[in-house]
Image (cartoon, rainbow over all chains, first blue to last red; front, top):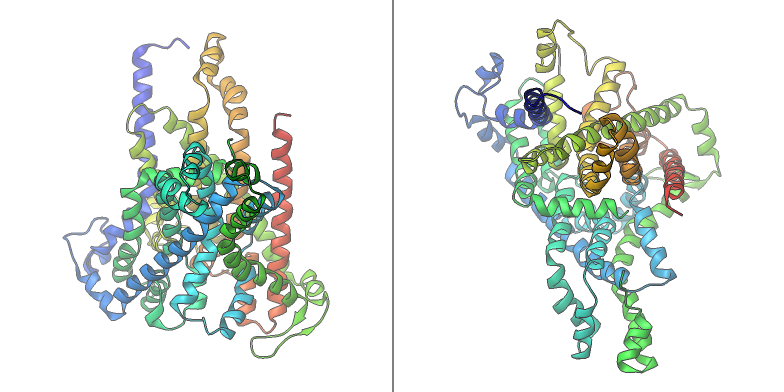
Length: 278
Length: 306
């Protein structure tokens, strides 16, 4: 294609501007949440796009509900679920990566299949089972649910990271008299650490963002996660008083967005490991 | 792929059959925690759901067997048929829309020489934001005739559109929101796949004098085909199973227009009189999902270089 260099240059710049605009447009709803959180009632009434001044009133309004409690609850069940899933996924992922056989193949296919099962299918029976076991409305119950929700994809990603680690290291460790478990914990896991960070990151974000299970299994307001509490708060305030809801929404997305901004590289690596190998 | 065979490797070092057997046992032991968790919290409830679907019961009274009557009841339940149809529409349009958007962004970002990470950062954001938060944002943007999107449309002389009050526009809205939530995954997957395509292929095409459309058709698409099918399959599964987008934005309304199978089953379970019917809805949904996956996986296998 022989176009004039000036035409090409202009085309490039136009393309870049268009791409930048598209990205801004895509992220617009997220920016809006933060902007709205700092708007006063007058700003809303005047339909300003930007807040007239940095107004923290909306955040004070959050004290009408135990919002801090919601945040703590979300941390407890998300990290608990992530830890449980990571424990199961490291062991299983290593096993599936290193051992071959019909049983192992079948199990790895089962893990893929399980991710297809909609939460609503198991929701009902789980509700009945958890009721009998007195696990409804408890941290323990939520951690168990999140552990199960996260384990299949965490295992799959962990396996794909273990696959990339050469086995020479382990053979050397065996010669030194290490057992399988010692080899995994002292030799393989440290090498796989960046991969495992990716797994933990994806698991944590998924758990923090989960809504359906938390809304069904947590019934007392002091156990609500941020998602459930925020939704509840929005229903209380209705569609006329958005400021406080937006302040809550800003806090609700802070941990996942923050973790993502800090560890973008790990997040992307984990996401790709899960998808491309599938 | 270098894989140590448990039996021979351990046997090679220790030359004892007992040790090899123990090694095999240990390999299964490693799987045990994952099996216990998934078995108890996913597989057992799954079987339980199928059992429930064959019963008539509620949370307070235990069920009695009714055979397939829940399923025959669903076959003539107009609301369920409508939900099935909307699930199909929602899944297909969401997956195709997310694919088009993800592919477009992936190809555009691939051409960037600088600032790729920044653009990627911005494009993955919708994935990371909690659905409750993004739905609150969209709700505010679309709430009524005075809301920001209608203001913007008014600027171009369009609208106002009752996004959440008209059955048609509410359906469009939940699909667009679903596309917004799922395209980042397609984008990042296709970007990685596109970056892995050897540059020589394009250089050769350039020498042959192929235009951009030809190279797209003859090189880019075939190279991305496998990844595309996998990514679309995953997004289709997530869309079919999507509860939050619909439940939080429209609640199935207006006039029941945006009920999908998942949301309808949820309402039937917690507000209806028959748990069996709710379970049956969910089971029908799962079977359809399995069928869709089977079709797409077959397509994938056919694409495998023999």
